[in-house]
Length: 471
Ligand SMILES: [Zn+2]
Image 1 (tube, protein in one colour):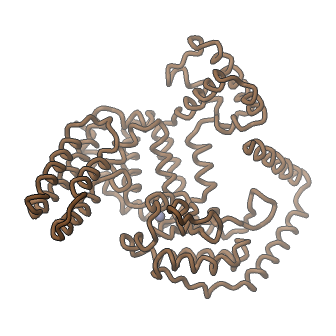
Image 2: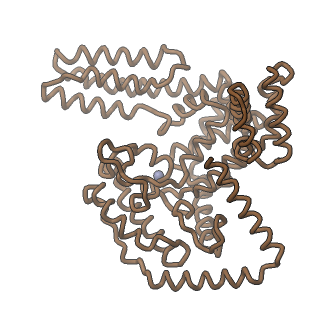
Image 3: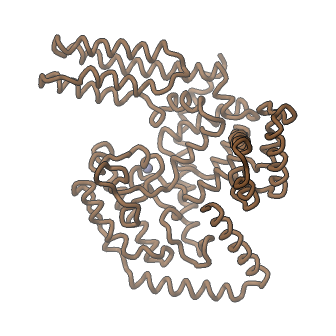
C-alpha cells in the first residue's frame, strides 16, 4: 500500500518543527509585551493569567491563551451556522423536505436567524436574545430539533488542509506526541487535501495502518511482562497468566470499535494481584503494573490517538489537539480531592497546559515531580514570567499572588517546590501601571469620535450577550 511508506519518514522531521516553534515563541512573547489593552474591559491591564503568554508549570511548553483557544474553536473549527446549515444536505444527507413538520419549522426559523447573523456559529447563535426567547417558549419536540441541528452543525468540518494550515498559524509549541500527531495530519492532508481529517482517518487502509502499529506496540509491551510473571510464586502466577492471556485477546481479537481496552487490561492485572500477601509477589506485581502503565494510550502515542479519535465526532481530533495547549487554571490543592477539596480561588491556581492539567487529575504535585522532575524548574520559570508581567504594569490584581501561592505550592509538593519571589517589585509595578493608565487615557482622548462610539457599542453588545448566557 502506498500510504505507509510515505507516513513513516515524515514523522521524523521533528527537528524542522522545533526550529519553527522556537521562532514562533520569540515572535509571540514579543507580541504580549506590546502596549495592548484588554478587550473585555476598557483598561490597559490584563487581570487573568490565562490571557498571558506563559510556559506551562508542568511541561514547560508555551501555552495558548484561553481566549485564543476559544476563538480558534469558534471561528476556525466551527463554520458559521448559516454555512453549516446549508452543508447539511450533502454532507450528512439531511434532506429538510423529508423531516418532521416540527423540524422543518425549527430549521426555517434558525436558518433565517443564521442569515441575519452570518458570523455566528451555532453555539453563538443559540445564545442570541431571539433564540433564547424562542427556546423559552419551545416545546419538547422543538427543543429536540434544535439540539439535533446543533449537533449536526458542529459536525460540519473544514478540509484537512485548511485545518492543518490554521493550526500551523498558531505556531503551537506542542509536546512530543502532539507534534508527531500534527506531522502525521500534515502528511495525510497532503494526500487528501479536500477531505476532512475525520474521513481520512476512517479510510479502511489508514485505520488499519494505525491499528496495526498500535497492536504491535501493545503486544511488545505485554511480552515484557512475561519474564516477570515467571518469577511469581506458584499461587500467584496462574492468575497473572490468565490476565496476560486475556489481555492479548482484548488487544488482538476484539473489534476496533470497542473502547477502553487499555483500562480493562490494567484492571485485569489489578484484580489478579488483589489478594497477594507474599512480600516477593507484591514487589514483582508492582514492577508488572509499572510496565503496564507504559502501554500506549492516546496521550502518549500517535497510533493510540488516531485510533481513539477517529471514532469520535468529526471535529474532535483537531479540537483536542488545541485544547491540550490551552492555558488553564490548575487547582494547586485539587478541586475534587475527597474530603479536602481545594477552592476555586486565585490563591489556589497555577497555570498548567490543558494536557498537564488533565493528566494530573487529583495527584499531588510531589507525585507529578516523581514522573517529571522538571516541574520544579518550570514552576519557577512561570512565576518569574508572571512577576515580570506584574512589574511591567501589564498584569493587575495579582500583586499578592506570587507570595500567596508559595505555601500551597510547598504543601502540595511536600516541600519540593519552593519558589523565589524576590524579583517582585510592587513599587515598580504601581509606577508602571500609573504610567500605562496615563498613556492609555491620553490615547483614548485623541481617538476619533466614531472609533470611541464603536468601542462603546461593542462593549454594550458584549454585556448584553453575557446576561443572556447566564439566564
Ligand atoms: Zn504542560
